[in-house]
Length: 455
Image (cartoon, rainbow, N blue to C red; front, side):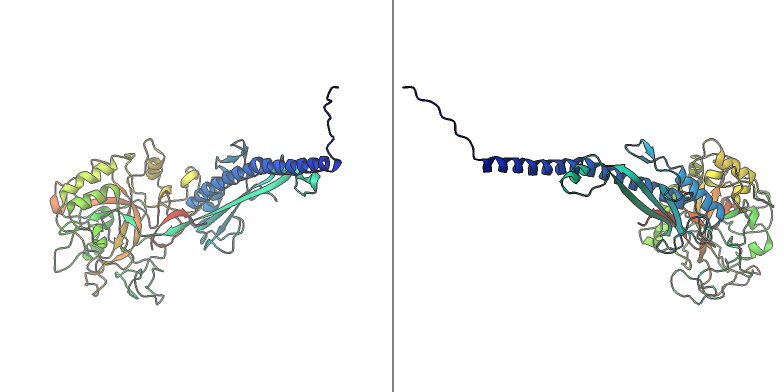
């Protein structure tokens, strides 16, 4: 008798458990796949939006300059940002023009409150830009399948990112030569507001001239002023007149400022003295080429300057200027709003400044422009006022603000006259904003700022 193999049937309860387990596993697998695919897409899109917002906010903040034109340029900088999403296939879109726009750009004075679009922001105080980038309709492919099992996941989701960038004061990187102010800027901290301490001037300080309400230290855009004064200044025309200062200083009131029982110093100083890292011509030479950071240099700081002809430093003036466009600047006594700065170089910008000088415009738009001739300097008082009366103790040779100058083209600096030869540069603005060809929002030459992300 043959043995028959007898197959037994699995109980129905076990078969039901297998189906239930399979269903549960399917949900888990779909959820895991959804997390991997859809959440991965959301993560990538979030990174793309954040990168766009970061770059756009910095670009916008670089355009702010205290005018309505600056806000317009900031909006344009955001619109021109090349970043996109969807693996660089879809632009974020222009902002500020319609409800639900993919990009919204807003401005604030403190970077925290009262955010307004360019239509409502105060251009005079708008130091910060906030860019919000939104992807409103990012498709989800796998997570919505969970709806069949009682989920409530939509087919589309929204991804949003924002960034804030602003013009933030910082310890200055400055060129190691200091021109002499013709006037104190109105509104300089300490002058009439009761403030005291580091970063302020003595109350009521004057150089014998009214304070300058324009914030230009009594100087004129495009005029040449002395970075290094002559040892014994006299009114005249250099080099024909031995000892004559640069053109903007070549008048008796400004020469009177140099009067002192001692020999006046030439104007250069070692920035490292402020950081207690040393002094010497070699250090100054390095600072001429690449500027130097002075963490404890601020308005009111005493300036310990170098004396002597220091003609060995001239080669470094010429070397730095050689890295830039060589266009010479011609002083124009009367400027009108003709050109802009930044992206709008050929458009009026609502403000009269150095950019409206035709030769400066030719410089910054010319072949080979790098901006290396542009320097940030600390501006100082001298020994006396415009009448030759000695300034009070604590007011001689102190920092009264910061400004930007343009070095002369390479080869124009020479030491043929020794200590009686001035070294000149062209005044281009009272404020200093790193990375921009305009002064930024800080008014009156009171400090140096740079653009950075704050949120």
